[in-house]
Length: 104
Image (tube, rainbow, N blue to C red; front, top):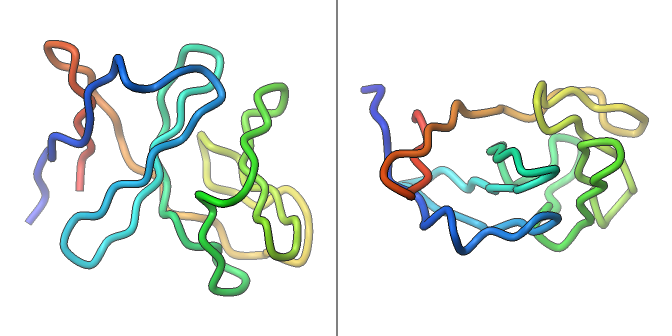
């Protein structure tokens, strides 16, 4: 079933930060970069590494995996370098009354 899930207060996100969010079995990461909010799966597609311990790259709008340094585009989920080859799942975001909602 597809539905919008209330994830976090938009005011708690500062530029360059990320917040992890779990819903049922899904591990999601919410980012704020250049005043835009993004959401992707939290686990790297190359090897099981938690991207919340990685790095947000504001200039490139990417997140870097802490394990093997693969970078993923936050808008598309596409890997931008090896060893990752499979994209991250991305999620649609809406801001409603100051809250971040994710379409799951």
